[in-house]
Image 1 (cartoon, rainbow, N blue to C red):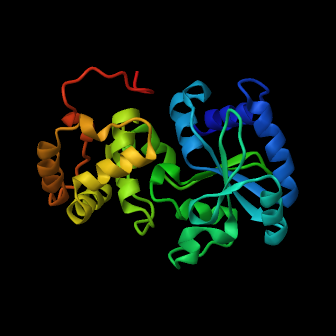
Image 2 (cartoon, rainbow, N blue to C red):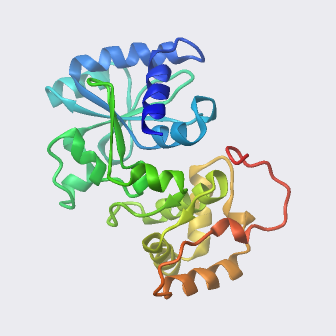
Length: 257
């Protein structure tokens, strides 16, 4: 799977089709400001579903040669400041978000010491995002066991502290319903604690604010919550499958075929 993913990413970044020429041009400009790595979601989805199954954003981190020069470039092209110290670039077909390595949230919060781009594998909330593609060397660098977990569709926590617990809980549900993931025991504990702290309606409201499509309302919530609590207290560390609690409705789910 690793070699196949490398080939798919190289094709995506070098192809002129489907609006990717804009991506090529943008990355060519950004390389003048530092070392670039592609991180997380794009790599996960392309590994699972191929380039044809990827329709989301591209997330990059840059180890800048000079941070002030990079930020000046961001202002000059009209980039918008996004969450946690990054920038959303003006886009056409493909949305590109980029964060300076020095502004990594886990580093600033004191949870992970981030000195090089390789350390980014330790800062993601989900293990399925603990992978980078280094544009300078055209190589993937994933955390140990990454591809085994991805092949088994197991969703688990990589770094527990995070600045957006409700958002990550929503993503965990959506990954299960849209991409077929089952939860590991640490994630199941986290979801149980998040629902207990914020309530189910807070998660629903977060999804409505953040996404055009709503999946949480597809679930039989009372039955689901009881079973999450049972799993969270089970000493056998079983995997949990939220998609087993879908309501009986007809809805075409992307990716799951």
